[in-house]
Amino acid sequence: MKKIFAIILAVVMLVSTSGVVLAAESNPEFRVSTEEAEPGDSVELTVSMVNNPGIAAFLLNVNYDSNVLEWTGITKGSLPETYNLEVNTPAQWYNYTTDFTGDAVIFSLQFKVKANAPAGLSEVSVSYDKPGNVVNNAYKKLPFECVAGGVNVKGTAPEPHTHKWNDGVVTKQPTCTEKGIKTFTCTDCGETKTEDIPATGHNWNDGVVTKKPTCTEKGIKTFTCTNCGETKTEDIKATGHNWGEWVTVKEPTTEEEGLKERVCLNDPTHKETEKIDKLPPHTHKWNDGVVTKEPTCTEKGIKTFTCTICGETKTEDIPATGHTWGEWKVVEEATEEKEGKKVRVCKNDPEHTEEEVIPKVTPEVPPTGDSSNMGLWAVMMLAAAAALAFLGFKRRRV
Ligand SMILES: [Zn+2]
Ligand SMILES: [Zn+2]
Ligand SMILES: [Zn+2]
Ligand SMILES: [Zn+2]
Ligand SMILES: [Zn+2]
Image (tube, rainbow, N blue to C red; front, side):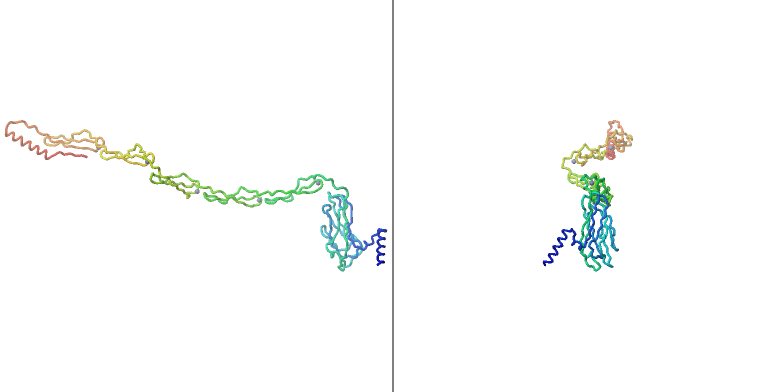
């Protein structure tokens, strides 16, 4: 126990006095080199094996700060094939025929230092996700340690400045409903920023009537977006009836209601009727009247009166006028042997005539004192009276 402690102490003393790290020599390492570069420079780092115990395969991630460095390339090192190398992909090498021994550069990495890289070391390292990614020919996992290196960016960090943004480029076009993106770049430092471009919104056309409205039913107007073809609809109000004038179908009276009707000018099957109120009761106000039938000599006429308030009518008789006779005219003189005839004509109507018989003329008898003569005269007088009584008085009227 004492002996072992003495050996350890001796080793520690050796290390501290000579500066040689004896313990490190037995640890296998993957080491990334460190290089100096200025912003904008291209730089190459090597990845090497140290204290290699004999390796057959590795699958190594490359870790770096993409804000400072841009990984531009990866190239083979001095190992025998097979390499599988690609930027932004884990570096792969294998050779299962035999273990490769000895230290070597296993691959190189090329970077470009970004223009806005701050001064100082930007670390670059390799790593492996699981122990089985670094093995020898017997699939034994090898305990390699990963030692980081990097790019030591020279110079001071660029002065803080007010970015000089360019006019920007549309990196995503907006649509009717989704916003777009515009990207601006600082012309001094290359930094970028983005701004949203608002969605354009639909660009509706003037619309097309897809259903005509009627008097009582609403119609539909359809609008289409000229950009994306989307459609929307709007109601069109019913037009309402376009009524013509009221027409009286039945006049009202003081006793009965009247009726009026109107027809829609848009569609004549649309009709509307309405009652007309009874006329208010009133005392008829008759006008002066009009002769609607003239009276004649023998027939009565008619006069018609109209109420100036309600239009009702009433009639009154006009009496027959009676004939208006002219003078008698003798058309046949009477004699002692024969009767005569006289005629008169109506002044209103010459068709109306009247005639009358004129009696026979009586002969003159000379006076006598003789009784026998007296007896004869008396006989003559009696005969004349008898004739008159027999014939009578003849008269004709029309
Ligand atoms: Zn800038
Ligand atoms: Zn649209
Ligand atoms: Zn109508
Ligand atoms: Zn009246
Ligand atoms: Zn007459």
